[in-house]
Length: 370
Image (cartoon, rainbow, N blue to C red; front, side):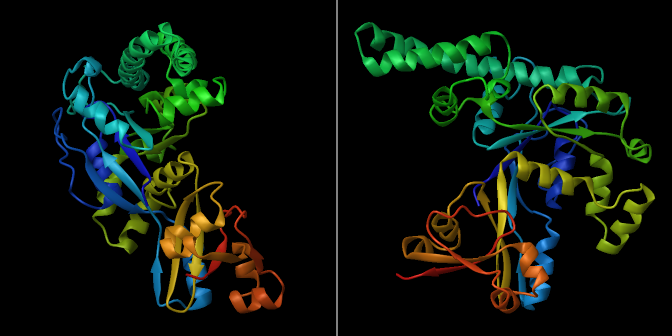
């Protein structure tokens, strides 16, 4: 699978409670004091997709296997983390390992739950985290710049080109702005350098998870704290998902039928965590394709733009190595014509070659020869 979303935030904002609900586990210790999470907890979470069940029912598949997203619960961050405060360097190293960030911010008032900054202010909390990530990136860029400048001085052409890239990145970071806000403004080669060579933290896409009180959900979850988070997120086009970590934790402990009843009480048709998973999936620019037959219906995850041979390689390396063609039907046609047989008879199934980009919802049979 290899796609992971790091759950980050200040201490005591509900990260570990949320992680446990997501993974339906008690891997992450949840407690009313800072730094109860030290090593990141890792959990694989199935991506909810009603299309898979529909495909399986059409093909009468004996086994149904969803696709998964990996979530990591990372230790809480405090001011000065970039200088080693709290679990600073450890925290920042763990963020470097994930593909995207789910930033949990506290959007509820409760005098019984300690806030590390002494008051509830989600925008301030986001800015604390961003400033620490920016400071660490600036440190990385300056360290690299020092080395490259020496090489540029003695006339190394590659060093001069790299120096220009580093100076552009430094300029953005010195303005105390995360690089992700400049993705469309930076030259493509500079962005690729920042993400694929320097692995800078503020290039990672972010979603905001607003953790509200259960009673806020009864009023649509739109309290003043949430409104401020949405205004902030709009500046960079980032998604905001409103959840009550406390309610999600309760739901995770209930049988499925009882979950439906509890959700109905809050006027909800699904757990908030389903939205977190789906938004995380979108944030990573992932799509799902399906394989289906009598034995098994399965969902597979690939990056948007993946070509057919590489998608086949997700199933088995032999499929990619010996790729001949992909027989493809869109999900809509698969349902409309009642599966493979009907789709073929209607001419809705087509053969695609090695340059075909897999689309979200494709139902595929790979033809290969090794």
